[in-house]
Length: 84
Image (cartoon, rainbow, N blue to C red; front, side, top):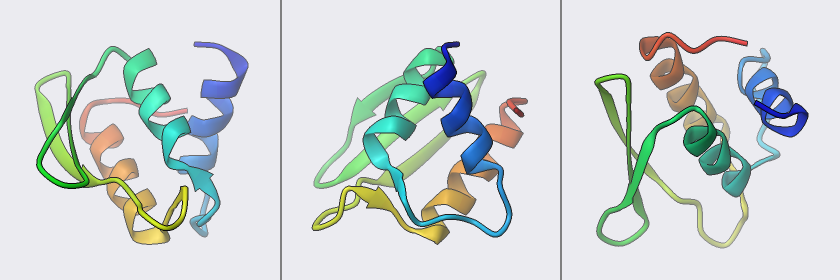
């Protein structure tokens, strides 16, 4: 994992949550971790990592994920055994 992905991971686990993490950086982190990322209908993105599955909504109008999405991403990563 390169420095940029590690920084994204650390930022996801910060509290309080930030609302300025670019969604493309989160998707790139998923791929780096070995997750299978597939497109769903509309803005849905399906992610599978270490037998843990989740569906996220890609943000529109803004490029950054909101705080609720960051919390969901953190829970997903924790369930998959990923921590900074």
